[in-house]
Image 1 (cartoon, rainbow, N blue to C red):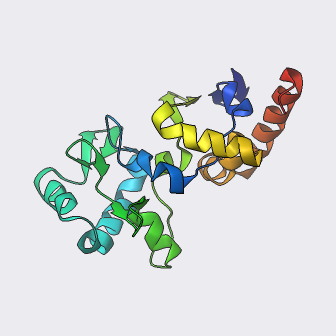
Image 2 (cartoon, helix red, strand yellow):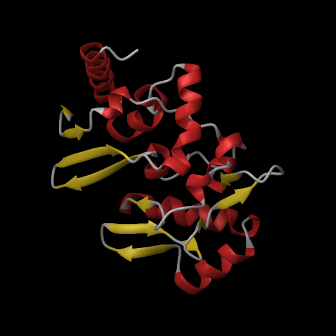
Length: 194
């Protein structure tokens, strides 16, 4: 484990290879899991806005679930996005090849929103446990979800730490990311990871 400011990270975050290959995994991280994406309280207004903008484009089952149960599950700081029948995120949409896409991210690419998606989704496969003023960050490797991305990253030479630059900068800032990436490179050197 290594530390950058108030954030403690598992060593494998520095050494792991990871780069999404959505054509192979088909967006599985948006449709599988035992819970919805964790949501920060500050994200609630923009997610409500996204729902109002996109709901008519999303799946009928997603609209039913949100109407019956709401857009979020949990309370306080333990909030997550609702899922349809314990599987797909309510914001999932599918392309013509059957790939699950984030409707929010799709709307951003189309210029209809200026927000990419919840930060927990942006950071996947990293998961953060907040304990007071300290964050603990782990690489949540789930073989059925992560294997295509790890295989792809080995072919392209992409490390997880660099792949998630935008997401980590969004969460912790540019200065923090600079310290983090220098520490990752140092760890790789120490462990002779190439």
